Image 1 (cartoon, rainbow, N blue to C red):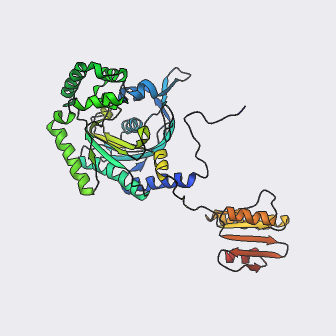
Image 2 (cartoon, rainbow, N blue to C red):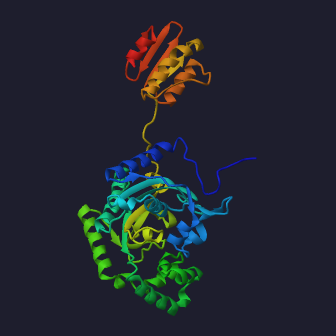
Length: 407
């Protein structure tokens, strides 16, 4: 029987690891530079955490969650996103008593059942950065600029930033009423997906995939016309702060987020790919989320960014060079015990080193040293050792102590 990775999952192979590692290490460094601290949450949570915060009518809850009953008949769900779990941890561990905002990030796998596509997996890795406890529009701009800085460090420049405000609980009800009235009047242009979204969360009709419906929605009421003074002022200040950072953006009045907890600022980074692969990151403000899961009224804002999407964005760029520092080749198998102590000392000192374990000839061992990009090769022979270093003449010595002094 031939076993393969489950559909919608993927292996990160050794040949892919240099780019993958670069992305993860760069993301960690950028988050740390902005004062965000690492957090890890369980891979599964109570299903209610996501159904209550994401919205019962959301695609995530209705179609995409991996939920199951454990042996105690509790309903658990593999996390489809990281914001709700991080906010749950914020409440559970009393972080509202810490100096605010609490700035956290995680890089972890998420799980959503959806049709696998290029760069879109059922198990996918995501960077999530969250700032909880501040309503300052400057923190919205900081998170957006943080991701811009990550892209800059990765030398990714082919993208657009789209920005919108989705209002809040004060101004959205009036917009919902006007939008639903318009949708009802134009029932003939809606498909089944649009009707379902109209009946659960009208704002999500702008997420439909049908081009004909999207074209008709151009004439629908504009949320921007319904924003309250506070939301409008907040959005203007976010734009001012982004301009101060020198971050270019495009206003997109039809941009909405797929989860119910978003309020006010919403944004999306879009890459050059078409369709579902175009989004490389998305985020927004969620001022009611912490309260929804039992915490005090607490503003928050954050984003999620797919690691696989960044990996694709790096394209065929040459990966960072990897290799070892010292390779020990053996002319005489009996010399293995002589070189093992030095091999261990080098590794203990953090110097990558290796030797042959496949019974290769000396020629084969030297070929393997080349594959590993070894900068120094030590050949252990019957009468001593020869040390070959790139760009230098070979040196012959009699003892391992002399070898160690040379390398």
